[in-house]
Amino acid sequence: MKIAIEHHGNRYNADLDQPIDLSIELGKVRCFYAPEVKLQPFTDGDFIGSVASGAPVNYYNVAINPHGNGTHTECLGHITKEHEQLSDCYTGRTHFIAELKSVALDNLENGDQVITAELLGEINPQSEALIIRTMPNSLAKLSKDYTETNPPYFTADAMQAIVNAKIVHLLVDLPSVDREVDAGALANHNMFWGTTGEQRRHCTITELIFVPSEVDDNLYLLDLQVSPIGLDAVPSKPVIYKLEKTKI
Image 1: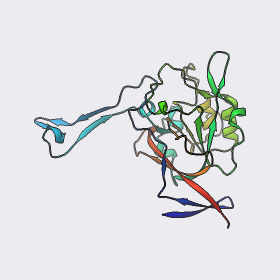
Image 2: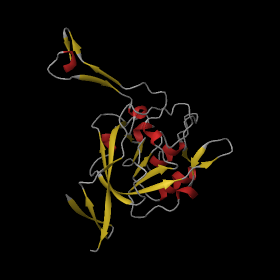
Image 3: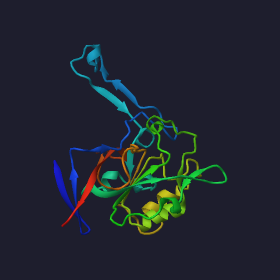
Image 4: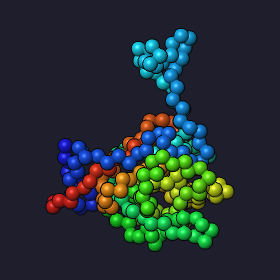
């Protein structure tokens, strides 16, 4: 199935039969001391919700931590007292024009690895969403425990550049846009959502994605699918589709 898209005076075609899934299965990665994902068959008396145990159906309880167990999308309720739910902020359409950028890391004197504005470079003005793939890219990102490893993060100037470019949805292959231990400042989260000024309530951050190495940097159609759970962050499945520019 192919569709035609018009965006900011440009026309594109996208093949919906060729999705590229950027999500990581829940429980395959871990960060911020999150407990492991637990999948247990529901039990009630002699009933055990497992076909292998004699039940007619598999009927499981699931315990997860969206922030720490896999790909998730979060809203400003992640850092506000009001604890807004993603469903309060992420409403309307779910498809966006997204730029995929592969970004190298800089090394600070203290050993931290960071994404700077200079490394980020110019952001395509057509973009509503920005997908960041840190380099080098490794399959280890699909099964990593990031806890106490001080993963890479964004510098303030890089996040300011993203806000200045009016990026609505930011997707990264990192556990967080901020330093793992920052005394609770969460400066980049606050800057992205404008908590000290005009709030960008409609904006989201998606963390712990994985972009296969064979996917080229370019513009894509992003379908940002999220779970309907009443939390500030929920498991999500971002899917992108190649765009072919055509004449209007």
